[in-house]
Image (cartoon, rainbow, N blue to C red):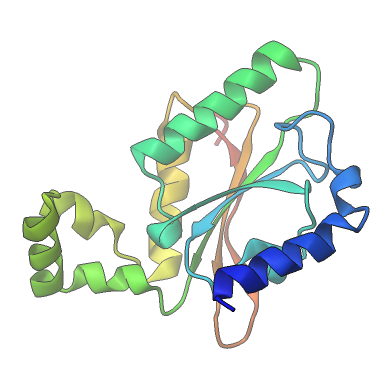
Length: 182
């Protein structure tokens, strides 16, 4: 039995529950009105660390949980749907969560970064900006990026947090603010 076989077996057990029946009718209006941007690291699963259930929030995961052009594009798409399909609905809160001991920190190593960039055709400067070595510092940068972006709807409250892998605690670093409103 492969690992994927085990996951598919778990899926069959899941499908026998009523969890799938409790999801929101509108996919871009999650039940807890949250949008979480965090890392792909399996040690930082938002369902586990925040207690999110299926349908509670929109979760965007990328290396380091960094705000990239792709993350902004996806946020813009969800916002567009919200604006045109449900203009009177409550807006979600957005949380950026970076964590300690992030594997993206290896991008801070010049030799590792250069080797990866040369081998796969990526820009070294762009890769260097993705490194999360000090999660409190990088989460501030990403919240500022969101607050400065015209791609982000002014109704979205944006905040930043760090997650400590050793203690399991999520700590607020940047209180919630909206774009264009100090």
